[in-house]
View 1 (cartoon, one colour):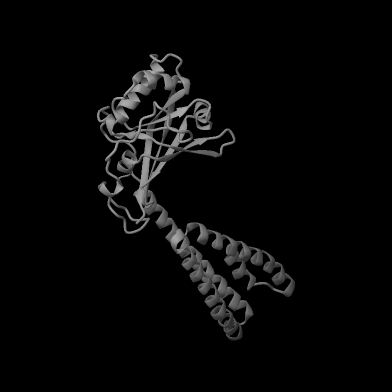
View 2 (cartoon, helix red, strand yellow):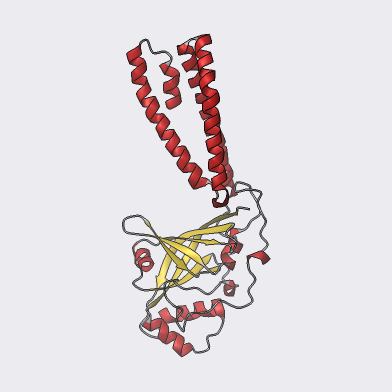
Amino acid sequence: MTSVLQLLSGFSPGFLSFAASMLPIAAGAVLIDTAMGTRVQLDSAEDIRGRVLAGQGMVAAGTGALGGPLVGWLAETLGPGRALNMAGLVTVVATAVATGALLRLRRRREAASVPSRDASNSPGDAGRGRPLGDGHARRPAGRPRPAAGASGIADSPLRVALDMTSVTEFDPHALLAESRLGVLATIKSDGRPQLSPVTPTFDRNAGIIHVSMTEGRAKTINLRRDPRATLEVTSPDGWSWATAEGIATLTGPGTDPHGPEVRALVDYYRAAAGEHPDWDEYRSVMVSERRVLMTMTVDKVYGARIR
């Protein structure tokens, strides 16, 4: 819009109409500078942000030093109105080219996302998930511990992408299955996200994520009101991420150590960590801590290897 106004300002018949057109042009220039500075700082990787800002400053200084004399020369050669028309036309064309490039970049990123569910829906291999919890309290006696000797992200068959937008063979399902820590996003009553650290387990074959949580916590309250949930995990080096979206159901809390709610937590523990050394203690802790088992049916999985 600012470029179009600059283009049209060259057709102003008099001083007053030209001065009136300068007001929205000046306001648009301020908005463009503010938005560009904000996006450069937010979108740049932390380790190169300073260099990107320095490059932006050099480009801005260079265009000011070259653009001013060039527009002055055009004004002397073609006249003030034609010079403004030419400058406005150049920025309109540049904006159209940049818009097309951004749209192509968005399509490439969408193409890089991975479909959600395997064709197989068999319940086997549940034991490949990792022990879980709600991430807010100390580990109770009944909460399973991560299995020792499990391979880390370096052992996984992930492919390194050339950049963020490249379509690669990176498999976010594998990262979900290997990750022991994640962030669960639920929806508050005011519509804003509630982010909670959790230790999930993911059954890839069944397309199900389990998280053990406590009744009365914010995420539990949110899921009872709105069952939509999102889980994000990252690799230990921070360069890979995977996100799973789905609908969650809650089981529990139970009041009977041998009731169905506690049995679901027992089954979860067995699948994640094997046999507990004292099942009576585990059942008692699950009741006393009012533990709840979240089961999220995964609808969509996506992610990327950044570098």
